[in-house]
Image (cartoon, rainbow, N blue to C red; front, side, top):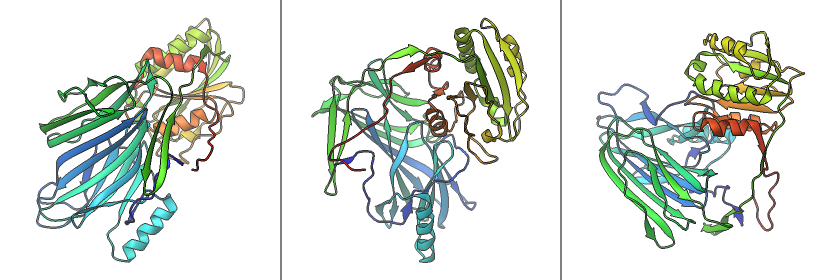
Length: 432
């Protein structure tokens, strides 16, 4: 068997999945390469989601219409939430959906260039900074529809006996039609719609699963549609056969134990002071620091502000949890300039580093320096490069804390405690 995280080879077509860097987009958007007489319209969005245990697969089908009398080319930007990643895509060519083949960046660019020289119109889906994807959409035929399908997967987090599935609703200022179909397997009780302005019906039993369907016309959506799913007790396993190959997704509950961690007496705070830092929620950052120093009590702090270059460190002494002098300095921060998170030099005497940033770099080497101690990456921004921040923190034994989506209590718990975690996974008779 193969693990479910490995994507099976799809039908051959001139589509690729490399990784490049670019800016982040707040909502799906199709930008036309050359000015058109009339704008291309997003006419319909169809979302189909399958949830098996904690694994959710979602397919989003976007139907665009070109009202002009000439062929157009565009670039679709499609942002995903933290923890979601693309596992497939398709685009209609000559009235038939063609599926993509995922490859690495170097091979993808080579295939793209080869098929272009062969006078074939390829589509190239690429990962940009901050978990956004961009896709070349061509040809958009005159007075015709163009369909694009993106498929992504995620592992739903479990908290307080439930998992939450999230679906952003802002596709357009006015969407002629929105259709959502959700099917949930592996839960004993019916899921519940927790949030969203869809006026959606409840879930009904559908064989060994629960299902829900909703269609809305002339939809003006904002925010996020959320579904709470009760967690089934015990271990679960799901299997599927695709093109003669067996795949499985297995879940085994593990008892997680938490305990307060010993806080260091010397810490470095790296404060992203670039122009984008102005948009962070500093009240939440200060609340987290208040909890941190309330627990640490007596700490030597080195504050390093980072833009396209790092400022000289400022020294502060926190006594009995009183960090007012440090807070005044942070309040006085001027946010401007580009971002190079690799610009600061780690303090060799610091026992851990707290990095406050959105993680989106646009200057320099675009990577963090090796700190040699636990790194806690903290984001209070609506738009952030969560994968980069999470990977950087976990590689050092630290954690990524998303203040934008977690409560103050949960954020403090993540920063001030340590817990059991998976260190290795082995399998017998499985590959990839």
